[in-house]
Image (tube, rainbow, N blue to C red; front, side, top):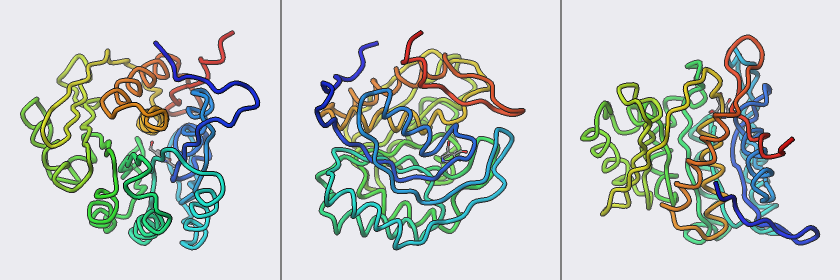
Length: 278
Ligand code: PXL
């Protein structure tokens, strides 16, 4: 695949921010985002929202970062370093979501900096990463600020109460998500077990775009959603259109899935490390 253009050594690369949780197992969350940013040649900025205690088997618990520290991280880097695109991942609570939305607006980033909202609700083990009471804040506060939202099918069910099991329900879900205010909605088909492939459906309120990718059957897909959203944000920082950025992100996560490795006793992570070559 074609990768993103690299900045010459010594020149400041584009800056992409992740607003997300830490995964002590290093497979998902900010660790996955920063790996993808680095391997795609952009400079990663971070606002940590929560610290999870987890390994390959599950999430044992998490600690939420104080609201002023979350807002402070965004303000500090936006006011000094500058941000060309951002993505959100694990946001844990409705107070954290409200704080991020307020800060995003106060810093003048709304409508100027592309924002990918990956509405992370639970880990792949089913452990909660977002309080159920925070779904309303996610929809009311953050979705209207989003350039793109990227739910998987479990998140679609929680957000818009649509059970996606075929093309028609996938379209219905995309329309319901778009009606919540993001410029674009991507309904990821990765969990659509009836399909031998994994079509994703993108909708901007007018047109549907379908993205097909070969399904990579691996138990080691921890961090796949984070990696996709991080790659899409990186491409948006480069000025890609949303459909081109999604196509790029799909290609990237497919390669990372091919390179996934076992880790611990449970699910291993997708790997961006293949980009280092041998
Ligand atoms: O992959 C979703 C995700 C995002 N962020 C954190 C996570 C996980 C999944 O476990 O732990 C911190």
